[in-house]
Length: 286
Ligand code: SAM
Image (tube, rainbow, N blue to C red; front, side):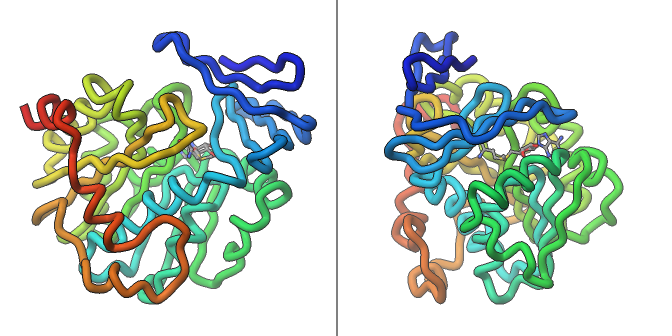
């Protein structure tokens, strides 16, 4: 739930008795799409802010943390990623990062809501600057159905850049969906899912993603925590599953000598994000 009071935008996390606020200069856009309420704000210090159904999605200032971890972690965890699929991701921030990898041949971005991308083109043009890359294929469909229909073994890396597990994204956090992902991935396939806050959600959402991935047939999985100031608790995570091999293994040499510019991701950051806090180890590794 969110409120706008005296030019402060506040997203409340009522179940956790906490909230996050940003000082707003003005509201730029408001629209009820067929799927969700989409708002854009001009903030005093974080650039533009996108909000879906009252939940903060991204700001100009801190989106690089999430987008770089959601893309470079899975891409460097695969031996030779060529075919990449993004489920959700309508703001195009992950797409831009994936396209930085020269070996990637095709990226399909499947977001249910075209309005998110149209608004992003206007208010986050820097994230959409690679949308005309001939390797990028932008589709507006339900990702759950799209994956069900995808040919078996056709995808190297699958990135689930979704909203929270409510509304149209609920089915993206479910064992049946992970089973369809497992079938669509090649034998060395890698899946990554945005997996909410380590502080608030380790014992429920993250733990369930781990058991669902195992049930769907993924041989190994690992959760990578990273900072994200605008999300609940300021601390976020992505969870990676590998069809075979160790989820923690990655192409460290290539990550250490990046051929493109990043703001957060490095080989050392990847290595550091492999370390789990003690409480998460107890919850996830039992
Ligand atoms: N980084 C963001 C976060 O975690 O708050 C998420 C970014 S992105 C804007 C999330 C996207 O997921 C939205 O554009 C939404 O339309 C899309 N989405 C939700 N459910 C979907 C589904 N079933 N299929 C495809 N896209 C979906």
